[in-house]
Amino acid sequence: MTRTLLCATALTGAALLGGCATITSGTTQNIAVNTTPTEASCTLTREGQVIAEVNPTPASVEVDRTRQDILVTCDKEGFETGESVLVSGTEGSTYGNILAGGLIGAAIDQGSGAVNKYPSAANVVLTPISQPTTDPAATGEGEPTS
Image (cartoon, rainbow, N blue to C red):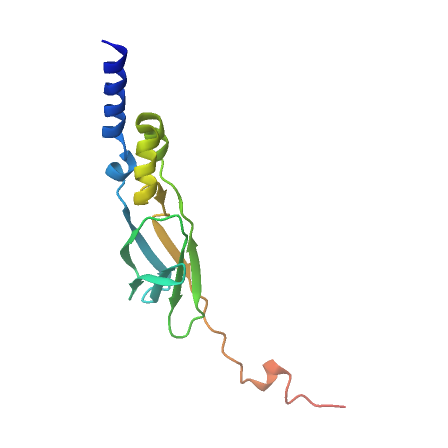
């Protein structure tokens, strides 16, 4: 093979392999949203924009993969608002794509969001709202004074 033909074949192969994470992992991801206790209402936001809602928990939502983290905020009557942050990480197939597809594949995956991934689940624990006690003995009221 001539050097030109070899280079052309290599470039064509790299272009065909480009976007491997886009193909193997996709540009969206399902995330399970769980709360303790269940039956809560949750909102997923990214950069201040609502991207998904779950009502009631548990349930799964599909989100686009991006570099930005997702804030999960959950509410339930009688409980304090709970939050969890889903940190955007790097999809493992990205590294293989850089080796196999080079800059073309990496650029395709970066542009599509396929290089990113989130944890597979958001688990939010809601704390009961403490009720003020009305028992005088518990508050120290009603005790004799000297």
